Length: 87
Image (tube, rainbow, N blue to C red; front, side):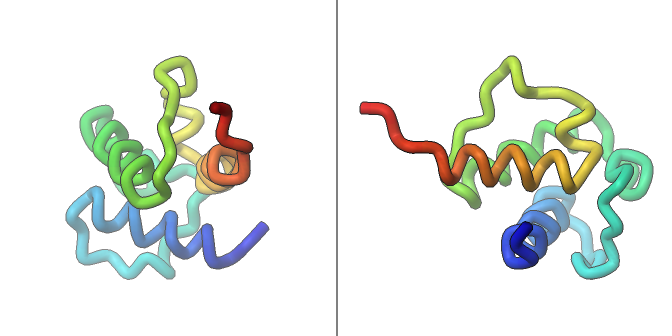
């Protein structure tokens, strides 16, 4: 997977959490525990991801698993970004 998207996701997470953490230090396997993300923070992160990547995260896709793993987030965002626009 692209390191660019992963790096951009990390930067978005740091912005959403209003943190001064270096995005490069984020491991990403257990983000909720690693970054102390609350349920409110998780929603904020997802809203920022929607805005930064120009996607819509469906309500049924909102889950702790999506927010907790950088791999899951990256795969989800990539699928949304690359999906053909239905018209």
